[in-house]
Length: 296
Image 1 (cartoon, one colour):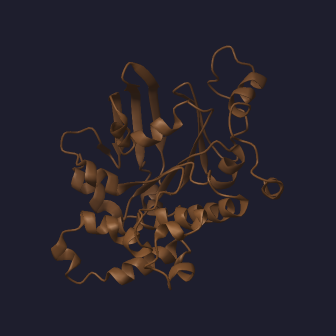
Image 2 (cartoon, helix red, strand yellow):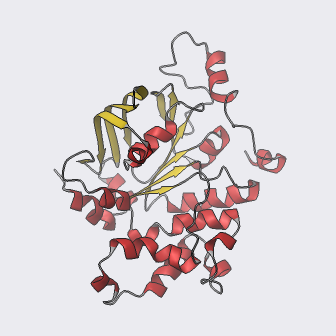
Image 3 (cartoon, one colour):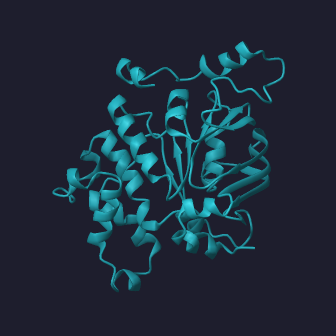
């Protein structure tokens, strides 16, 4: 069995290489999760492959974000959380006693629904995590932080827009640029997995398109798991969809085979039309604009 050190040390292997071995990046087995006495997840068992983008989709309150946040145990920040079952990241059970939470969250990065750059400079946002996780001796020995910042910003298509204002506050950027910056600040830590909780929900149609393009470019280097309410976005940006309802997975299928209505394991007593209503009438799944609708 891997140690927690292996989880972070294996960063050198990209997602495409891992996929070629037939391994999975994330595996859950019989996962139950409770907030106090309230059960949010019921017996969730799923395998998430490397080198692809997997979307979690379903109505509000169905457990998508809860499942996403369980992959790096960030749920535990939100109160009285207990779990049963198993979550394995790169073959290691993240609830084993020897797992370091800082190392886990270094390897499993998170991008939130609304951009949340730190209220410091663009430059310092990029190196903040690196400084927090790297011994000072290593930072002072041969690591060029200027190169780290430029590389991260280039990877998210933000270098040209920011190279002359790296000392400006990150909050001065547009929302689209702030979200790209939030992705960029993960990259110096060399995560294996990036979790995205509705990363485009605060953006306009053009910003959505550009962030989706960026996510697509990152897919071969990282396992990406994304929560979305938007079925059009799931079809555009994902390789596989996991449909959730009332804390359970009711279908996990690849695109384009997945349809607007999950076919297998529908909730009891629901017709096809009723299931479609569950997934669409209660969500923010409407197209963002007429311009955006024309592309889908």
